[in-house]
Length: 179
Image (cartoon, rainbow, N blue to C red; front, top):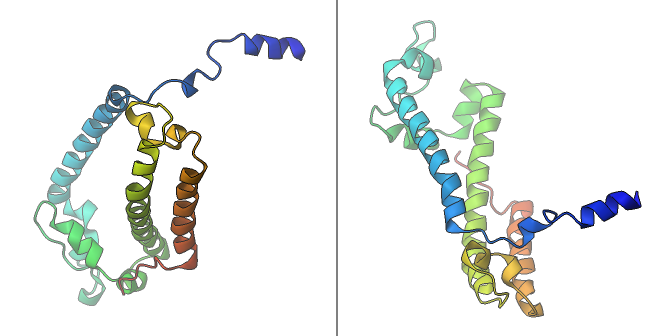
């Protein structure tokens, strides 16, 4: 067991990720291919959505459904369907579709609200605190808590933001209703 620990302590790669900076080039080298793939899939969806309505919106026109059971028609514009989906009341989805569909859409709406609230609380507070933290970091590491050194009071900003964000989410103050 002790020989294993000695071999690990001699390994130069252990802990090496803690000293490297998150450079803009490393972030961009990850984001650019992902953005290209996402753009390709979005383009394919936008093309196929109009060409194959039987697969992408069958409940709007199928003759086997009565008129009052059909889903409302969505906009034919390129991105107009996003607003149409967002404006459909949750009660309509619950009454006309499956419980799984309702819960999934509800989860997506709540996740968007929680993420936006978290960004609105943390970014204006934590970015300035971390940038002026005095830790000597550079590039993207400048924006992290790793840049806050020898300043006990600046760490309270992180704890306060966590308390506000998670406290508001737990108390239900971020309930998003579209009924």
